[in-house]
Image (tube, rainbow, N blue to C red):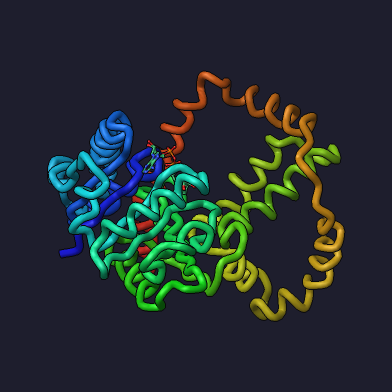
Length: 314
Ligand SMILES: NC(=O)c1ccc[n+]([C@@H]2O[C@H](COP(=O)([O-])OP(=O)(O)OC[C@H]3O[C@@H](n4cnc5c(N)ncnc54)[C@H](O)[C@@H]3O)[C@@H](O)[C@H]2O)c1
């Protein structure tokens, strides 16, 4: 039985609790703020109930899920017998560096330490610690109990077996890992998202369309296909002769577009204010939390629908 320890139980750590417990694994939770652990347990309780309602607990009850979550009162207690430590501490380099120095002396020799970091390469906070070869990044997309993708990124010194074990564990718990061969800024998902955001802000800044129009272009256009296929499969199906035909026909157009899009632009205060005004007209500031709950309810229903659709269609 694989024992899991969660270190840092804020937004992401709390969601990880549900992911591991849902897969039948015992989980210890540590956070220097006891209030964060209480909040994570509460989020797990309510989210487990929501998942049960959509049939996404694999036939288990929320009580079974909760019985696997054990708050720990110290970092040492949390990680002592853990095989996999999922670190979700704040995205601040000095915090991660100090935490990894502590972890190095507390974990089992064969334990894997995986970081949820959104953008710090593991090499920036594991360089000087003993046993650095067992550290890796396993970057989830928020919230991981609803979005299964995990990016696995090794530091130059990460042992390949650590990547293998992390990949296997992620698959076992129902996540979808992708492996990067090396550390690159933004990993893969944020590089893709960043490219789209850069173009979205550019189009708004140039007065081509509003931010609401951009959101519609994705939510009611591109995003419908992206719900179940990526950009390569999309273009493979968008030309009679498949992807090579598509690239022959449209490659030059995309190359011209890419040249036009190549010069980066900062997101100016005025531009951000304009987009924020448009966003607040759709969702007021006090309404943002309710909208996040709405997003998570929609995501749970989409995940359930996707499972059913793909089960019937394959
Ligand atoms: N929020 C997202 O959308 C998202 C998505 C993917 C990955 N991540 C990554 O996950 C990590 C956590 O992000 P979050 O959004 O959950 O942050 P958060 O602020 O919600 O939670 C961080 C938690 O870490 C705790 N903490 C503070 N110091 C600590 C220490 N020394 N050791 C252990 N825990 C400590 C805090 O008390 C807090 O509960 C970050 O590295 C972030 O980049 C975030």
